[in-house]
Length: 318
Image 1 (spheres, helix red, strand yellow):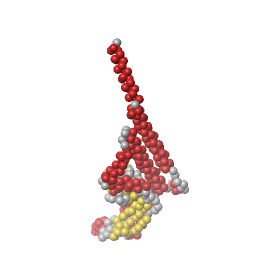
Image 2: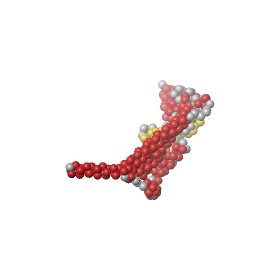
Image 3: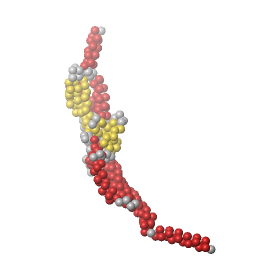
Image 4: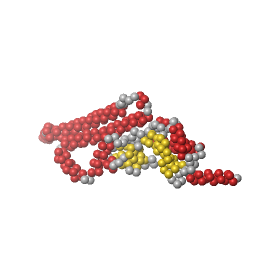
């Protein structure tokens, strides 16, 4: 009987202990309030992230679909289509950067709020972060420079994804952009990662229009008037070929002899093309012009003229 009484008392004491522990405000805050608040912070962060993505995606989509009022004849031109494609690609790039920045801001706030609920005093942490930031700032100057340079590149629309640009000795197509890094793919397929802070000068081959410049060397013995006529007529006809017709803006301009050499004279021709299409147009024109010069028996180099003279002299002897 006494044993049963002792057991009952121990059970009552255990129940009272658990009840007192549960009713303790500190326990209630630790077990109930803090987890609920942390869960609420995470839920709010998720909702804010979803809303930010939704708003940015809608703004990006609106910017892409927005079409300025332009005459229908202008909308059908290749130049307008190229500019419109470039504008749409820029909006996509801005959308990607905006989503990244929004995610960083929201989840940084969420992390600080969770630390505060766990009892970590974030005020000194934030203050010390400023001091530490100054201390390490000298070592992170290049990183800050990269971010600011990337921001101004986007704001000023210096170039975008899909553009062909030249940075120093590197020429390639922009495959990816961020606030810190620009990624280029060159003609050999190499992928270049260039820090935005290192981009001091950049040439954009995809802005508005490009120019194909051809240098056609012919023999000094050739008739310059005939050469100019053949080159210009062939170039004008070639620009109507289906392969490059939509890539050419305007008619070719024959600039005439531009360089003299003991063995040849170089004739220059220029034609305005769609952005980034100058190389393909130049290759097509070179092929057509070379064939036309051969058909018109135009001697291309001094060595060719020597061979022709030798052949003619041998023919006379026979």
